[in-house]
Length: 368
Image (tube, rainbow, N blue to C red; front, side, top):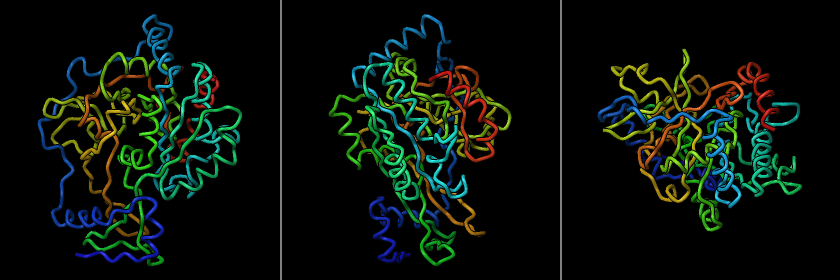
């Protein structure tokens, strides 16, 4: 089936990397009815696959902190903030620019953290913000309006992730209520591809950069902690993934072994026969990435996802950044979920933000 995309849509989405050949491949895959389940030999993490972050105040934590500060001081570290997606969770307002503490927004608080650590280390840590076609312009305007890089604060670069078009279950273009093709952001697995396309990754490497600390814009617990930079260096992998203890009702990816290789397996990919309760921790989507190791194309799989849009079923294909762990040596670090050293405080919607606000305020204040 040949998809007919109008010139207006092509022109609007071209800056965001609309790939018509890739879209055509999604149509072909629909007829094959692809399964998302893991096909290899699957087992829980082996003993030693998950390393606990040493407790605050311990001599080991201090040693790791000093090693991390040295890397920061040398200009080897950058921060990556994921702020793409579709801007639907907060009533159509781009989450990155939603006020959290007074007038201070999610992105402002994330960048404040980077600025504080930069001052502590004695060097500017650059921030790279991955946007989407739905969030790019508001985020760029927000950075300028709030003067987030003024007064000697670290630089911010905003770069967009990819874009694609939704399909109907039969493989035609899914159209919005106004009849136009329905665009979507195909997942944070775009990160390495978008970083490379923007030229920011090569510029970072050429300037002496070595490590990128990545977190979601809505997880204000995931600060730029020098100790985790130091632990990444000590463990020696290309990727370090943070995990926390599961609680009842938790869903998402988790560390597991597939054909003996430790990696993140997304929750929907576990076969029904596999008992996910045998894995005590899950992925927080906070990573330390070796910048040179991710400077290549990865054969990240796209997974079929069905969404309800305007009361109808739409099909989209998405890829996930955690899948990088299947391609490069990965280590897992267990961090505190909550408390003074807590690193997992996601706020996916206004209700969750309201529940977590006192904890976020206390944690941000203590770290500042």
